[in-house]
Image (cartoon, rainbow, N blue to C red; front, side, top):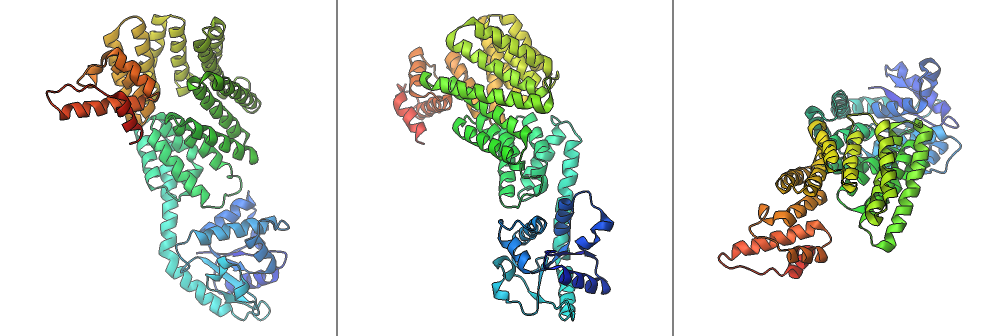
Amino acid sequence: MAIFVSYSSSDGGPAASAVVGALRARGFDVVWDGDLPDVRPLSIPAWMETSVRDCTVLVIVSDDYVKALESNDFMERRGVRYEAGLVRQKIYHHRGADGVAVVPVVPPDADANALPSVLQQLVIHRFDPGTLHGVEELVRSLGTLEEGNGGDVMVVEQGVQRSRVVLAALEAHPPSSALAYRLAQDLVEQGEGDLEIARAFDSVVGVAKAHGDVGLVSRLSQVCLKTLSSTLPLKGEESVMAKVLVSGKAWHLLREHRFSQAASVAEEGTQIAKKYRDLYTAARGQRVHARVYLHMAAEALPYDRDFYLRRGEHLLILATTQFRSICGQTSEEVGVCASLHAEKQLLLHEMTGERDHLTTAWESAGVAEGLLTPGTEPYHWVSVLQARLCLAARKYNEGKEFVSNVIATAEYPEVVARSRQVRADLLLATREKSEALRDLLGAEEQFRRLGCDYAAATCWWSIAKLDSTKLVSFRLSTSDVLRLEDLAPDPRERRLAVLEHELRTTRRPGRRCVPDWACLVDRVQHA
């Protein structure tokens, strides 16, 4: 393995030059920045990262290097501070002090007890650049280290290489393919601590979302956030955490109906992206935040609703303006923003009954349809939205055509499940109860399989109101339905209360129990 010499050029140059010459004279492959004029790497930070990661690091300890290693306030030599941070990361990620591929070299008269704690756990070598005293002991230690660490280094290199191979295979297949899905699951299962997966987050999460797997997105986000929080971010990759928060954690929290947490995470991701000038991720964060506020407005009390709508509209305007600046006036990202604006106008129509909002929603949906690529997931979501607009406008047959086409052609399970749910509403509007029940049962099963428990419970409750005998052994009366909706705004709790009553009924055969819904709801809420 090669030896990488890390030092501060302000006061460690003579010692570094002497060490390099002595080691090369003894047959070692030595890498240091003195060779940069010949190597001419495209990126100095990337060259540092690769060298620290792949080589045994020999640290020339000097006063300025110690400052760089200990303090983030040491600004005079930004290059050595960054390099020292990479070395510190390499030490921290090694299991124990034995065999770590970092070798500190100090002057003959240095006080080892005064060294930074991160170096004190390692074997310290003394070296005199004038007389070369200490070089033979250093050579023996380096030889022993290479022999002892060969297996560990090979395992790490093989692990990184395996991740890259799997990622390349995943990116070579359509996100909706079964093979890409299996590869994504494998990466998440084995990926804790693997920076390669965090760097390729967009590709892996795209596959998980294409299959609507909320649990997989949640696990991937946890793995990546844990990995990123325990490592020093590499130059140019500081905003990876923002992507994970915006496109991963906020996404699954929204589908888990945890709106407050989703809003907080989206805002945090947006701020991180802004800090590191990742304007694209910042715009996506603002749009996700706006979507969360739209969901919150739909369920809020009247005096809170206006606040959520105003905040959501403000964030959506900011996101749209940013996307137009970054991607152009006719980009797909602008199309997604237009569809969200249509969602907001539909919500306003449902709240107020004003036709102007419905007209504006149709116009925005048309803009979105024109900007989005047919067959993509955002395009299918616009078709579902148009079906909902048809329901509001009482154009039931036209709405059925929209969602039936999505169900027949879309490869995205979440979109298909939502299409079945919307088609059920359209079928009920034309009094086709049996067909509506069939769609609701299919949507409920699909949502539950995807981990969208709130959406699944919403479908379940719709079925229970139509014909509870499709789900349990007794029939819910109109008064039962009204009572449960009054006691439990969350359909998941209503479902559990009904199932709890079913369980109690089966334990008492031959006796008809009158349900105490208040007691049952309280029981499931505090379970």
